[in-house]
Length: 343
Ligand code: AMP
Ligand code: MG
Image (cartoon, rainbow, N blue to C red):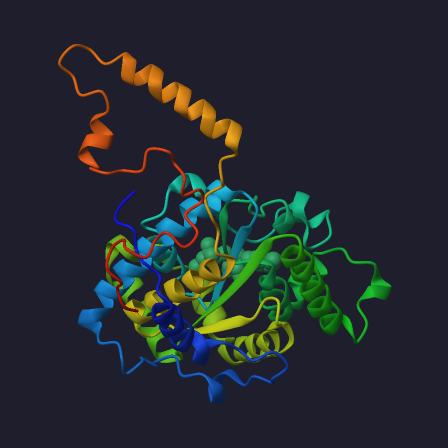
C-alpha cells in the first residue's frame, strides 16, 4: 500500500461541496437539456491541477477499498450509464486504476441473451451484485431497462411479459420496482452509486468521427451507434424521466458533465470517494485472545533470529513502532500521518 492519505474534515467538506451540484435532488423533475451542462467545468479546478487531483482521489479510493475489503460488511455497487461514447470505459480504467483488482468486479451488460430473457428483468443484474467488501461496477446497468428498452419497444416485446402487465402504468411501475430493489440493497449494506455521464450531441459527433478516422479505434464504432444517435431526442427524454423518477435519498443520481474527460473522471472519483467516506470502513479490531497469540508468535520469531541478524528488522526500521498493537482498529489514531491533500 502507498502513503496514507489523510481525510481531514476540511477535505471531506471540499469533496461534498464539489459533488453537490452534480446530485439530482430527489423528487425534482429533470429536463436534462435545461438543467445540466455537459461542458461544465468547475472554476476551482484547472486541467493541469486535475491530474494531481485525480491522483489523490485514486490513492484515497485505494486506501478505503482496502478497509472495505477487510471489514466485509458493506459492498458498493456503482452503476455507470451514458450515451454512446460518453466515456464509461475510460472512467472505469482511470478512477479504479489504484485499487486492488481483487476487490473490484466490473460487469458489462449487453443485449440480453435468450436465457436472460427467460427470467424477470432484474435477474441478470442481481446475479452480478458485489459481495460485502467488494466494489462492483455495472458498465451499463438495470437502467438500460428504462432507457434502451423504452426507446425500442421491440426490446420490450422480447421480454415475454404476460400481456396484462403492459398497461399504461408500466414505466412508473418499473421505476418503483427499481427504487424498491435499490432500497432493499442499501438496507442490507450494499450501497448504490449512480453516475450518468452526460455528453453533448456535438461532442458525441466528434468522438464518433475519431473512432471512424483512427483505424485503431474502428472497433469501437458500429452502425448501431449511428442508428442510436438518430434517436438522440428520445434518449434525452428517457434519461430525463429516469433521473426524475429514480433519484432517491437512498440512492441519488449524479449527473457528470462528460464533454471534458479529465473533468468527468475527477467528478466520478469524487462521488465514489464520498460514498466510501460515508461508509467509513475500518480494519477489524483484533480481540484479546488474538493479540495474546500475536505476542506469543512474535516471541517465537524473535528467538528464531539467526546469529548477527536483527531480531525484528521491521520494528528497527519503524523506530518506536507500537509493539503491543494497542491502537486497535486505528479509530482516531491517524492524525499525525501524512499531510492532508486537497480536493
Ligand atoms: P456496448 O456497451 O457498446 O458494448 O453495447 C451494448 C449494447 O447492448 C448497447 O447497444 C445497449 O443498448 C444494449 N443493451 C444493454 N442492455 C440492454 C437491455 N437490457 N436490453 C436491450 N439492449 C441492451
Ligand atoms: Mg458501444
